[in-house]
Image (cartoon, rainbow, N blue to C red; front, side):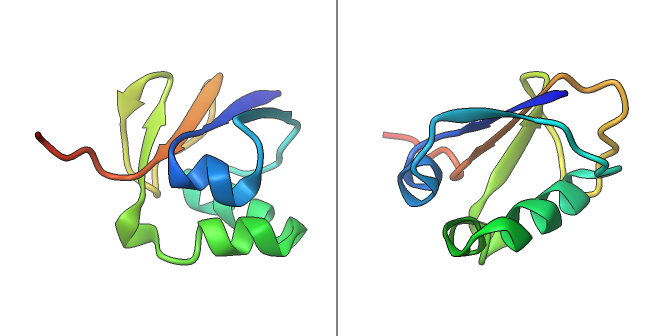
Length: 82
């Protein structure tokens, strides 16, 4: 099982702040493919990966990172200063 967290507009498009999933995904990109196949709201949220960032167990990562041993995946837009 893996906890998937959604922040900012990602959460708004999906309609959930978090969910617990049982996944066969080997990488973050595989997880995104599983999610987008579920419903249109996921496809909308993950339509443009250039506008998304991912953290694995609270450390910034990339979409090709392996999920083995990971407990938490978080998706969020890039941070901006201000």
